[in-house]
Length: 164
Image (tube, rainbow, N blue to C red):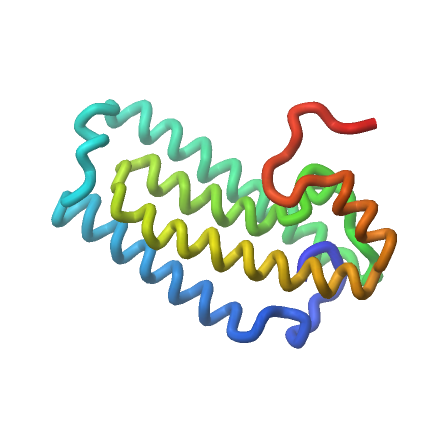
């Protein structure tokens, strides 16, 4: 569960770990098969040169991994059970999930496999559902404090200019 120093398994959406693994397997199966073997939907890779794609993919994956690492460090180093609103959590309410989504996006950008967008859309939906579930729990636990945080901080996409 995001934002709280200590996670308890019953606070996660049921079977979330299994669902994440199955979605990852679906994405990488489609991505590998289409990108390197069948090449059914990689037409864009013939238009966009390899080096810019790989550089862009590396930057996106690195950014995603940095978000995951920062959120993980904040989440698991704080055992107070309080609402975490610092670090990456000051910019988006779900930085770990955003980092995961960026990492998948980076793999898509590397090969531009259009078929891989199907499991990617399923992954986005999974993390959206997980985030919605967690937000309900956080609102129940922290009430007005969480609602104010949610009003100030965007769910997924950071604002370029922070509100005062």
